[in-house]
Image (cartoon, rainbow, N blue to C red; front, side, top):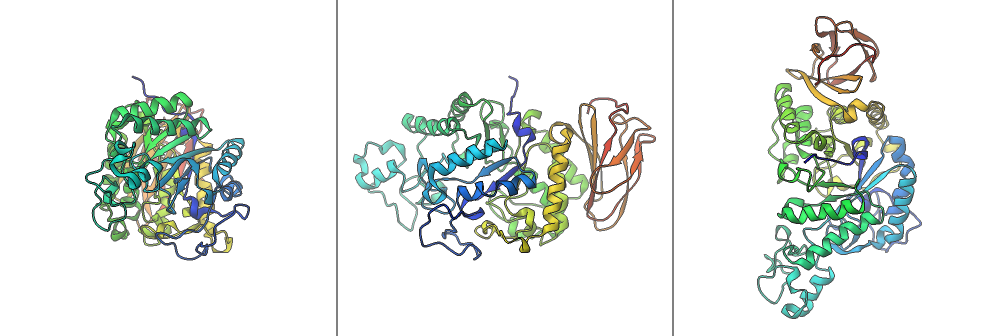
Length: 492
């Protein structure tokens, strides 16, 4: 069957918001015991961010160039990250409740922005109503088949291995028994309900751990019935062909892309301990030929429509921040961001990366967003804006075909083409100025003039099937655009 992914996603630039840490509105009542906003983040403490705070910062996001937001969980929960869901139909009151989500959706949609929520369907929490039934009533509860209990009574707060199935053995996260028809219907109903309320898609937490194609096939049917353009993107850190055949997910969070960018742009200078986590390591430094092979292999895994929908990220709430992984080397983040904005699949910016936030693994990567502009890296934010604008201004970067042109030492170049538009991107990840000749035979005819369209000025004329005399300073990139009236040959 032909694979179809949501059209709007191909033109999206996402911004990931961790709700407790992004912005706090004075209009949302709060409990008293909150951590100071600018204090170091902790595993269990709350900062008090909320959804109205996000509404009040939509101007900031639009100015950056963002037109889609992915939120970590927003539903009622006794954890600051809200992956311990108490009620799937109630937005957490600290975030402003259901009314705040309604206002966020309405205001975002008025601005042409899309909203994707985090769906935690593999596990619930000890406070989830049906599990609380088991804690109170044991084997007499009518919900006994909603979870997998190994022995009675349930020890929900023990320090050892719980006597029921729990995510990674954590007692606070009892796993749903998705073989139970009532559980399946409940989760499918949640998925459908919020799409009907106007949410534009779901990011599916630890999706592969519901190891059941039929479950996800029906989830897709319910969601797409509510909105055929809803986006379904799964958290899977590895190759995911099984789930990306057009009948389950539209895409995954592209951690393979993330790993490749760390390996090439941070390379030998990466802070290895920050990458040593389950699902993420090992990451070994790559030169340009190794990077090219990794990228081509990754793009070759999936149908092109899937590639155009893959969520291409440089970091998330589950990873150390890219700038920290690169040991503070801003040039690594700048190169990776330019590449991200020129790569197939919607880019996703983890909140605060654009102003230079740093932080190691959880909880350090989840610091509160500072709104005092004097502490921002204004130059870095300006660079992000230029890279995002480049993507918005050129359909070839959002929808075009991808072709590797050369990979030598630490020099890498590729082309994107859509219709009459052809762009050539060249990156020097090395520490010395390098001369580069880019082969474009079969792509651009001799005599084609290529102009610098990103930061630098000047032009080059294709001769003998090559772009000649291109000098790249260390740790820099250029983007060249061909005039549309020049002849072009062959499909990429």
